[in-house]
Length: 112
Image 1 (cartoon, rainbow, N blue to C red):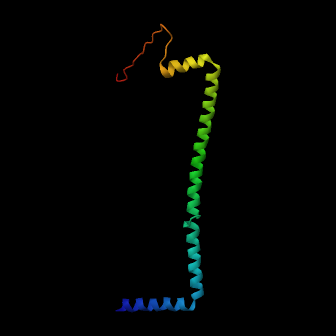
Image 2: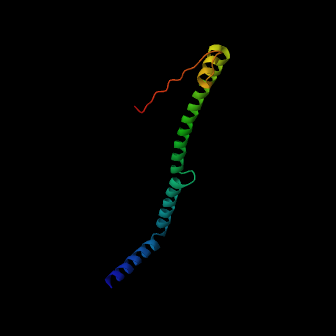
Image 3: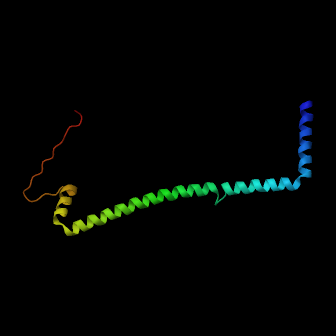
């Protein structure tokens, strides 16, 4: 029975504390709610950290795409101005040959 009486006395003490310190309890609950909202809310700390990380990833992707675009522009200019470059691409990429030219492919067996 002692544990039951102890629980009841603890509850009475808590109830008395709340009764006499009601403003403090409300202020404490308000502060806790405010902190929770600041951390977990729509524009909270966690959301901001996640968006910062996403922003960095997108900036890296953008930088890579800009470099790719610059490379492709340079490639286009080379193709427009050089017949040799056109021939090189035709041979390497499309396997084209000049008339009467023969191509030999060397196959290396990598199993050995």
